[in-house]
Amino acid sequence: MAESFWLDWEFTKQDYTQTKLLKGDYENCRFVDCLFSKGFLDNQNFVECTFDGCDFTNTNIANTIFNEVTFVECKMVGLQFETCNQLLLSLKFIGCNLSIASFIGMHLPNIEFYNCKLHQTDFTDTNLKQAKFLDCDLENAIFENTNLEQADFTSAINFNIDPSINQMKKTRFNKDGLIGLLKKYDIVVT
Image 1: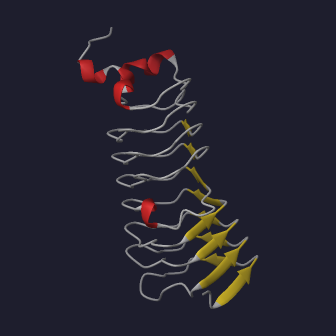
Image 2: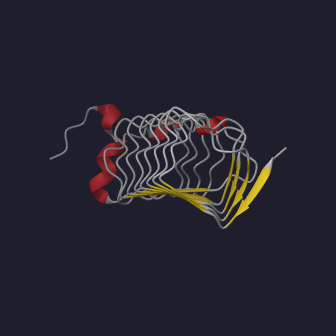
């Protein structure tokens, strides 16, 4: 049960690596340049919040609720999103580094990634129907048994997606990115 409720608060340049963020419900709050790295952000409730320029590297987010939460220019390396509470989950990422993050087995239709670095990010068994990967770098991202129906990769780069092991009906690519669908065949395109 939540201990406190914060509405319309702004938290700026706070270091939560040593002192944990107070447990509670945060609604329409903004976190700017806060440090959560290697800390504990578990069992929290965030509704309509924005995190701007925050560092979440290897942060524990187990059982945390993220409902209509936007992350802007955040460092989120190694986060295990599948551990968070998936009830009412709604996320948006803009300019974030999500390298080595994990979304394994999650239900994330319509999720939006804009200008994000998603190196070695794992989307195995994830529902990404109608997801947007606009201007994203997907180097070594893992897509296995992933629902990518109607997803938008038109401006994504460095992806390697095997159509034979993913659901890809009406998935959008630009013609320059089609090589990312053929890499397993070791074809040379000039």
